Image (tube, rainbow, N blue to C red; front, side, top):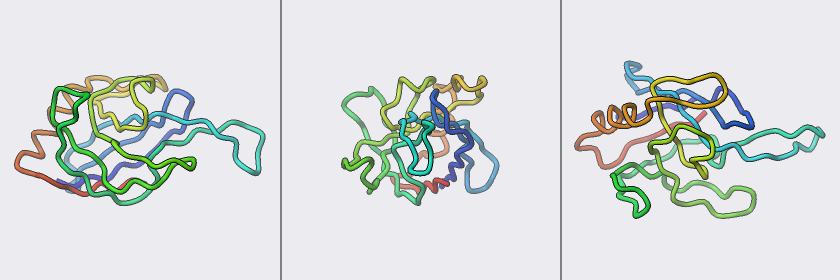
Length: 139
């Protein structure tokens, strides 16, 4: 099943959004690590995710650093002059638990965390039974 992730808030505590299934029946809250930068036309610090807006193929993946199967985004563009690889959708609750990956949860607590991430991830993977690849649109 394909998904659309819409980013809502760009904060020092993370990039918060909503990830909705293509049929509109399933929604998760999302959280990505926020990287600081100063826009050219400002002196204020802003926050950005590692993964650019775009459409990504996500393939089933069994990472060494996690003890469960997940999905990995393919062909992520360079970020701040560095190549990007290993961007996963996985269980996490706080910004500090991500180095650019996408965490999903069932709830969001203010501008601090997403909750019930394990439950959300299990629900997400149940929707992907038998799926080896899906499309994730990030906007």
